[in-house]
Image (cartoon, rainbow, N blue to C red):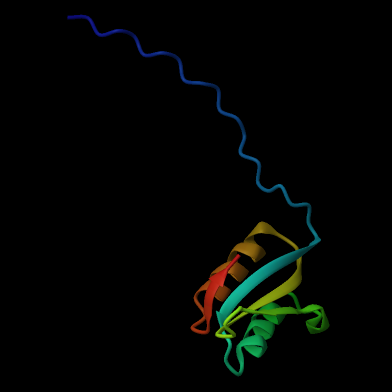
Length: 100
């Protein structure tokens, strides 16, 4: 039996590294239970990755029932690696439930 020849592979297209132009201001939404220290903890992580982070730009939004708090931070993104590591650090923080 003859097997049909394999069709040619499509040409590879180079993967675009990022759609974000660096440096740029980049908002990140972080959610956790509304407990003392949540905003401070998020602020400290933001400062690790953006030493010029301005905590006065933080936006807070409480859940309807008041149990959760949404915290929007805006950092100066300098690279995809920086953002990836920032998301990883926030996502694994014990006070954080969700990072968007």
